[in-house]
Amino acid sequence: MALDSDPTELLREAALRVTRPRLAVLTAVHSHPHADTDAIIRATREELPDVSHQAVYDVLRALTDAGLLRRIQPAGSVARYEARVGDNHHHVVCRSCGAIEDVDCAVGAAPCLHPSDQHGFAVDEAEVVYWGLCPACSAASPEPATTSRG
Image 1 (cartoon, rainbow, N blue to C red):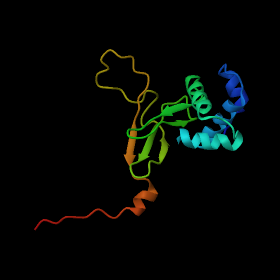
Image 2 (cartoon, one colour):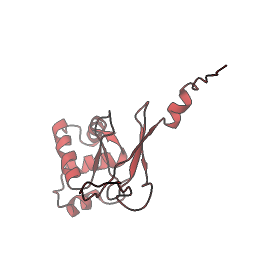
Image 3 (cartoon, one colour):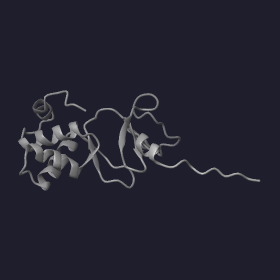
Image 4 (cartoon, rainbow, N blue to C red):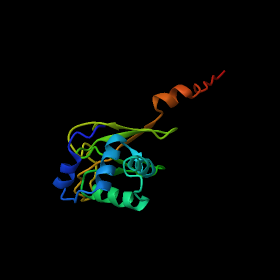
């Protein structure tokens, strides 16, 4: 996903100081949606070779807290980051390789799912994760065995 807006302006609009690490991390996440922290560190170091792990972690936290990034963590996976914020989209995750893709909200506006019993909660978001095999893993997996009864 290309960075549509000027990253400097995005940081300023979020009342964040504009720093080289923040610009580099924001650009890295936009370029590598659903990347884990290690991948973001590698991408950030292409622009800032001396940036520390801790600096990237701190920037990810600041950008997430400011609403410029979203942290997701499907079951059994490490935390990943994406720049698609401001909507209530969902994800489809490959059980084999861990690939993740965005899925638009299934029905209606946020929160798009209405629980049968809210237990007094004021629900403002629903998280849905679809699980399966991506096209590459699906093509590589053997056909399921069929059983016959006789």
